[in-house]
Length: 515
Image 1 (cartoon, one colour):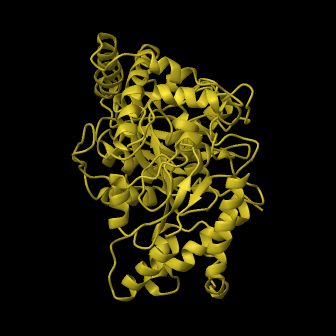
Image 2 (image 1 turned 60 degrees about the vertical axis):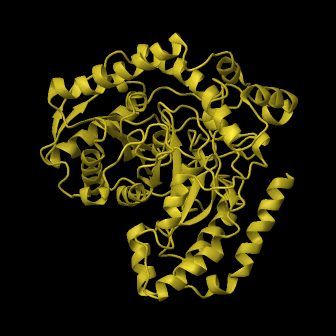
Image 3 (image 1 turned 180 degrees about the vertical axis):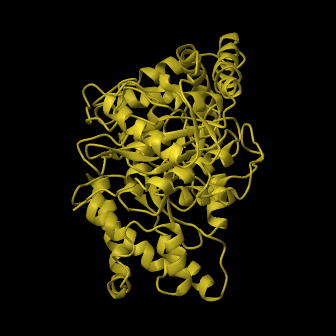
């Protein structure tokens, strides 16, 4: 309660400090559902300033996130945001622009290091005073591109890797994030706050992280676009880890264009990444209206069938794809998913212990996974009122990364979903990419039983380390659902062409009615 009160007081100070500027602005309505393209048009013409834009989002956070619906997507506000906005406005007046992100507010998931006085907490009380001395590599990239780090978003604590009975979007430090389309429903996880914040227009852009579904699921369920890039093309340096075999950060935005421009800003070779890859730069050139024409697209039927209403919306999407010139190849199932999933879990347990202990050591923290387990037990009332930490304990029981069991599991997981999975299916049917429904519609938040999770399209690409894009596909009732585009390693360009072509042909994104 004290922490929430401090947040509200801080937010009130920000808004009061520039209330006269905000009151004079005539752009409050045009800023709703603002795109990056429109924002740049307004900023470059002088009809809008970055200070006004920051204040606009701060006012919406106060109105809908901390009051009103109390979406609770935003965990921290950057106290330097307005000062940075003022500096970037001055640069623009001098004719200097760093690119499409110049003066644009971006939220970060609260497991990404920043050096500007915001703690990097992973949603845990144990890390409430973890103030990094340096920016994560992707934050350095964002600042260089002129982005304003507006704040940090809530997440499923420890990126949803503490308990098999967790409630997505809940953390011991920040509480429960809620779906802006229906606050009784889940945001999905673990980039829960990032998904809800973008969807509810509490920020223009956000960064999420994914190990398996944590960008694509909250994007799909909150009615936005999410891109999980190929492993190693976006640096993991300065991000609290689960698995170096699968972790990646990625953009979350209202449109494919915005997500791609954000991805262009954050991707780049970083020698400090566990497995860096030189990515394709300037992916925005693949935003083509005829991007679907002639593409052979495989329908992965064994990644659906768990929700009949969702499947009905997907069938309508196949018609839209065909209308845009795509060649649909049906029944291109991916084999060995269950076997790969078992190996994946073994890998995650080993790598979580190793990676987390490494992060703690690099941060000069006295914590280890073993000490964290003890801390949670000592603070059980705050940290474990709804679910436990059995995944933590399973990870702690694992040995070193030289163990035969780990090495075999890692090798088999990659083979089953890579060479003998996605790659084999693409080759067999001569395909450019694969599609499936991203996730079921949002389920009821249930602290007693945890997430009512039926199925998703995320695991094959996540385990293989391949790219995956989700785009709004339509609605089941009042709840948004997404369609997934995924394919071979480093096939972002192909997926972007298909995703953009579909988006522009259908325009399925509809914002939540917060009032």
